[in-house]
Length: 77
Image (cartoon, rainbow, N blue to C red; front, side, top):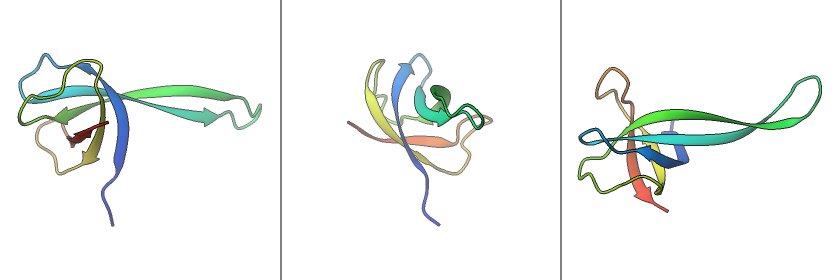
């Protein structure tokens, strides 16, 4: 099984070797069929501290590195 990959925007880079990435997706209401945006924030590992606020990045699933960090940044778009 391949690892999940998500695209998002870096919203915080204040932690050491960690960035917070906001991922948006579009969902549809089951009854009314109206589409709406939802977002979720993921903490991702950034070893070289090269990504900053506003960067569009790709994150990939990985084994747990801490209590909340289970993703790592792959590349910048």
